[in-house]
Length: 583
Image (cartoon, rainbow, N blue to C red; front, top):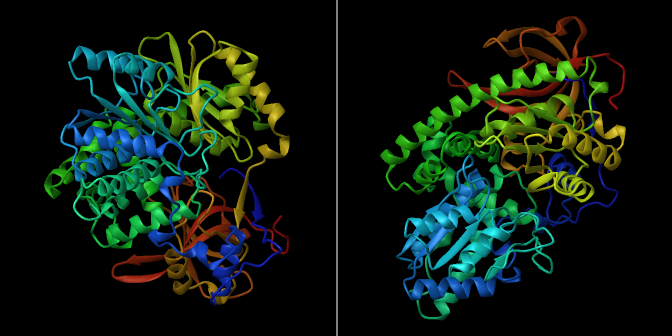
């Protein structure tokens, strides 16, 4: 494992305002994550922010209601990741529930179309005789200035629903709903694309009910919350209070078996029990299998899985997605080896690497460069952009992953401002972004990127660290703690799952499955013997039975052959020097 500094999460000076007693451990964890009151731990739907605080939502709802009433052709224009897939599915199902009869969706091809609504998509719709009356973008559109213009020119009304950061120029859409657009008072700026679309549907339901177009209060949109939870977690947006409500409500539906057949099937092919899942399973089990379609082929397959009504059809599609994910992992593994060889050629020492890494290989796959960038970032603790050639060979498409403290979209904006024309297109978030450059501009871009990164951060930001919640006392190392922590989420981005550090005697260790380190541990200073496992360490690891080990871990309930016992999931391990303090 890459050496890391272990840093303990600080506790604020001001205690939280609790209305009831909590176990001291949970109180400590919540306070460290910025929770200030009991209300922030309430995950009922009535705690959700109001949809009517979203700027533009009134106009959007009026347009959609008119299209439903007049039986106009409505097209949903999605995106090729899990947030885009769930957003598209939520839009399709929700609008059908509210009376839309002429409804279809389209997802751009990652390889031939690129990201979002483009003029080329509109031109193809025109050639096919499939131009809609109303086009609704989901999880994209805020940067589609040219695409929206092409649609409007042909008499199409456009409603943009998105959550990505807007540029200075906005598309000339008939309505824009995006919590991050200037002047929007909506408090949850962290909503995923699927969350924004869900809000549009809730406002639409109220509008249609007031117009007498629905029976009673209208359909129960709560049946879509499993999809909202999946898209929110898979897109790695910060889990503020509003997003935690979405995720917790969706998880409850999944655990009760009330989820879409496609979600249950994706969990089943991965060997997960849906009654026991957590947010982590959505992010690391369901999301990657869904994303595999958009990375390697066509996200329409993933959307078809989510839309499937029958268990048999959902299972068939989930199996196909699972196979795609296996192929994706194989491609990624080969690309990672190539990237490591490239890194080795750049410098024999990590300190000699550029601060901002721009890597390219002509054989890299466009659909996997984002994952590759994330893996190299983890290894080097530097912002990384991985490039692959586009199909025409004239452009390089890049996917960026950043480190804490560096807003990657702002970095790209600075590069664009200083070197006009170098970036053909870019967009994204604080931690991830996408872009395209000319095929002959890689060296110029790499230098410009590294220069801006060096101005934006200090050398300290490049020091790899891992943050923990301190130690657990020996009496806290038990199954009750593992179960309590699992029930006390949902955990996720900016509301991280608790991790702890400590020093342990390693009674014995062995490699299992060729690359996982299995250990028997005892807390330094005494306590019960505990199993531990560190995944993907490789076979070349130190003999910790001689030195002891300092580890960062998560308590987990592990069931094997009908017996459940505590197991520590080890995120980081290094030889211990008993008596030294963690920094």
